Length: 238
Image (cartoon, rainbow, N blue to C red; front, side, top):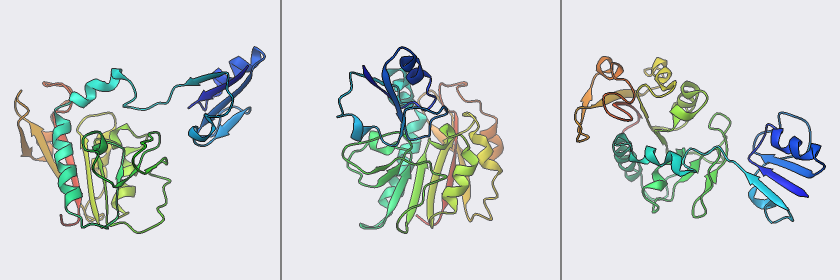
């Protein structure tokens, strides 16, 4: 049988089928870790080919209901409000791009482009590239990312890349999530950016501005579920 293993770059599943005598192919934006039948690129254009079996397992944060609990994260409300204020500060026609497809899960009416390595959305432009490798084709007025960089392999490098990119920047992330706190080691004065902090002060999801020392005392998931403090990085006036 002709088998497509979508969103795989390890070659493990593909090669298992090949050993059983099947014509198996893997497909991913990344090159295969093992030599063999591999299509590097977007899987969408090849789905209409005559495949007998399709196996797909994209590593997308928001793909399954198992991750749906993160959308109940009360701190996301704070991240989202900041993003909406940022987007509204631009005039029509000014080019802005979001790193990580987050705000469109809340408001579909926004038409800005998105750089997201894995997600695809039919009604908007999603550039499936790593932010560290992305080379835009036109100048930008603004770039923003909310609660996304903590999921990248190198949050500090991603934040630095963004801050060097456009005159107006917004980056938010939850304190204590994965290795996100390393972003705070950047020289924000040199990058012409300012950092602010907020922390959650009640079960009713009340938030207040605080200093860095106070924010860093918070542990992700304690005493309240999800983020208990967030960092807000701003560049430019908006």
